[in-house]
Image 1 (cartoon, helix red, strand yellow):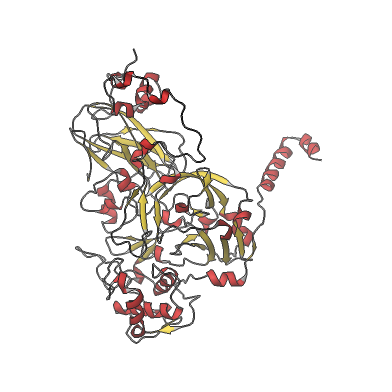
Image 2 (cartoon, rainbow over the protein chains, first blue to last red):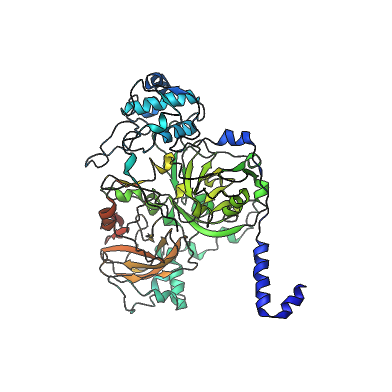
Length: 178
Length: 435
């Protein structure tokens, strides 16, 4: 059959070669359906709308103890920075002639990123060791250190995405498709 | 009697094409005698008068050499060719959060030996058992899928030579005072490998892409769970799940057993130890695409999602620490690259940018890969300001530092691609300066 078509002329032969090439690179399908448990275990990313934020809540007042125990050694007791990044205050210094502090308070556009990052990576020496309640508590305190939330404000899945970060509107999307 | 390289002066009467002794690149394309001289630059640099020692038969000629080794390593005499590792004084409690740099000034060609590829990790290098590693694809898909390594190895593969450059590479360029150090110290968050792996679009299409999916989130399974958002166009374009680096499986420092490869885009996005891809409507706005890897501009605004690494070049010979050995012939050489395509041309100036000579580009000239350039030079021993300027196939031209700072200010911290300037002193000492 193939040989017969080739004999019919150049156009048909070219068409066959193209079709053959397309078929030849059709990849196998070797993925296996992902168990729901696996997805739940690993799907820890939190976008700005808060989708995926877990149950739990805390205030900065409750968070102080968590922060002092798990965060202050590297970030300082007031978030002023120690062996690792300064994370508090610095608001209004992004154009400062002398010194700029890019902190959670002065620079980060979304409070949800704070939950995402602390839960996935902090503290450095024991990631994934904080409970969800402890994460809410620690980040409530971090936000309080920059006076973005009050000491008794309840931080949870509903209130966190609604926190307006001071530098929220200062980011410009430079990506254009194509 | 054969001439030593120092005596080979085939172009002593050649017409310079730009000031201070820059010769025509075509001299590399003809003249075997010239090439013989140029090829032995290291011999030229260390040329010694013939001594009694050289007139004896060396020991290694008089006894059998050592037997075979399962995995070869460089000569013990090449021991100084190592990554530049900076151990932070404040590394507690994660010494592996940081970087090491490729000694670009000691390398030739365009391929970075795998063991010298720069390292950037956010909480160390994990020791992953490949049999227990899985890649999860979920989110806005018809069917969430899991792939093990055995399965991925059965897909059709592609190979391509691409550089990876950390977005913070050459960050010292934003400083008031020019940094002191080797090319590797200043620009060594840059490496180039032949990568082989599975086109990512195979796997995404297999899971069934929901038309609402415009981005993916790629995540590593290192202790930092490093994650970045990537537009779906790139994910369906030249993105690769890379399994091999320079012919062998990817090194642990580079993401073993698999990493995301996004040719030409910020190194940080080429997520190592890749274990999860989530298809999403919008960006996830992770820590590394908000608080880091965004470009703070003079007006206080920040440019976000500036993905491709811009056109850039640097001369590696001569360069700071790779000094001149007296007047005479030299080959100027270095790297040029662009995250937006192929390098079209590289120009060299030996008079601070007043006159320029086009360098020869060494094949292969691959898209989003390091490209090696060369230019013959007759140095008269006088003080010289030496610069290279790259142009890519989109027509983008590498800016001067002044032009770059004029646009982006000095608080940017990322994507520095200004022209590097070497001040060559009469003593032969080479220093990094601002021009």
